[in-house]
Image (cartoon, rainbow, N blue to C red; front, side, top):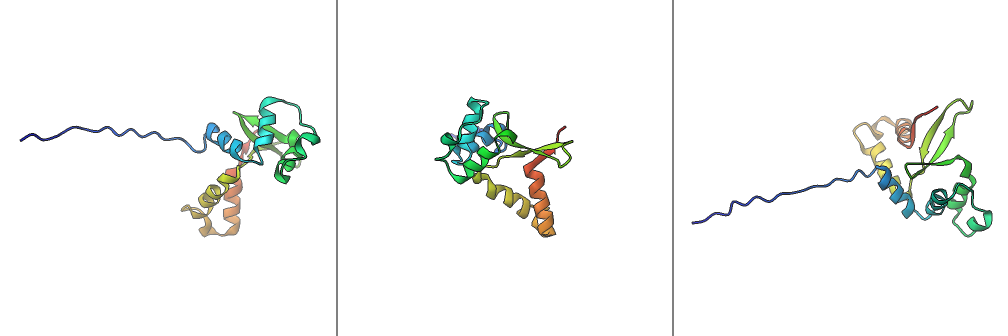
Amino acid sequence: MERDISVKVLTMTTVDPWSSCEIQKAQLEDPAIKPILDKKLNSADQPSWQEIAPESPATKRYWALWESLHLKDGVLYRKWESDDGNSFRWQLILPKSRIPEVLRETHDSSSGGHFGVMKTLSKTRAILLGSTSC
């Protein structure tokens, strides 16, 4: 009597959903962010209003922020300056597809929404606003 004792190898690959590559991919899939990100990737010059006029209201809002939008590792961020201008933070331009994930993390995690609205809001801001750099 022969027994099959073969071993199957299971290979798991994990992709960090918050890697620069994955965030850029999500930004390029977002119809409001894609036109601005494409322009930033291909030119330092702000597109004319005529180029942006046919786009969505959200894209037009990003266009209005052109000077404060910057690329870091191919990902679009807003440079959020302090009132006194002495410091700033990098605010990720969050693709719409990622909003539920951020809200779930800030509310449903063990340190999430059980501490009230202000704590949840503070945690959400901390996730979306990076560390001070200046």
